[in-house]
Image (cartoon, rainbow, N blue to C red; front, top):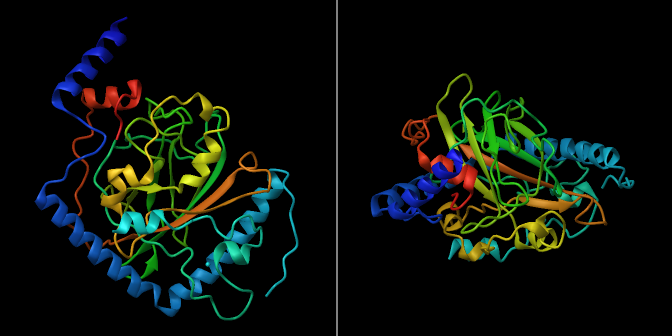
Length: 338
């Protein structure tokens, strides 16, 4: 009863304050954001032209090939043999990010060939600019590779790679936090609960999470939150959101428990955060593929590369971690989470 009254009071206070799922940036904030996008995008494009990162692209594709085989085997999916021989928001929303439809050939999925020369296709080389802070992760999230914790939904392997654009090298030993909504569009309310976790990045700057395809909630599209902290330091060097095509949501919406999600769905073109995340050169949507022909039940794999700049000391840090009633509303009542 007491908690119910607290939640009711919190929701009323937020409604009066006018907190909304779509933030309006001031002219100064928008200008700062645009400068960061332009600077980060150009820096990463230069990095991707380096022989070292082109070679890394090839090695990462081979590594993901092995992981793809392992996931399919673990999930009892058919493993095939392969011969050794892909305005800004509208632009990227119009592009299908499903890799070569339903092929299971890793060469097609990850954009490489079994040759000595790495492919020039940047299928896994995607940067991300800083995004405005949404609901902040909780300090004390668990170190987890599998963050599902009993939540039902379409299996998703989320593969991230972190590149330091100031050195053009993978960022190892960084702390990478992720958090997301469940199939019903709800966030967990505690630091030790479902669909929250962190991992350190590998020597190749990679982290992989086992999770579920996120559900939507009122005012927002499908997305996952990501925060990156520099090695050995609490300083945040990236906080943003990654997005998905409409197509997997189309299938998810017909699958239990997503069918129980009664929140109004917001399409990508109607979600203001994608406008803040995209630029003419930056595509904020993950690449993805179904794991098998029996989709969506077989699950899916998705991947994206995040560019961070350790030399940039001007990146805005999260506000005070002590939560106000906004936390209660965002994460317990789920009325208007960002």
